[in-house]
Image 1: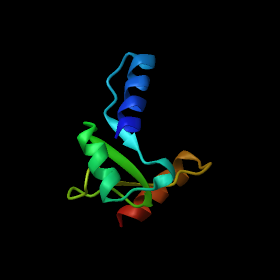
Image 2 (image 1 turned 135 degrees about the vertical axis):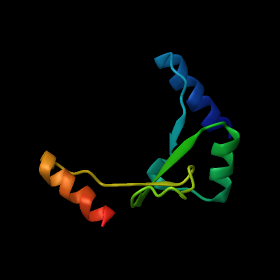
Image 3 (image 1 turned 45 degrees about the horizontal axis):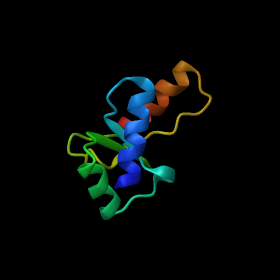
Length: 84
């Protein structure tokens, strides 16, 4: 917990902005790390699990979409594929 809180404080000092989100290093997370992120006060956190965010998603275990070196049209198709 101390490392998470200290990292957040350092980012806030550097940017002058409140840090609301957390990304699990290498996507690694378990119940203990999710609990620590919650206790540290983050509003949401991202994993490296592929997927779209659904309304019922756990805000401290959000999936992501891989974004490659795509054109705008290609990116739109990829999103549409995930939503269908």
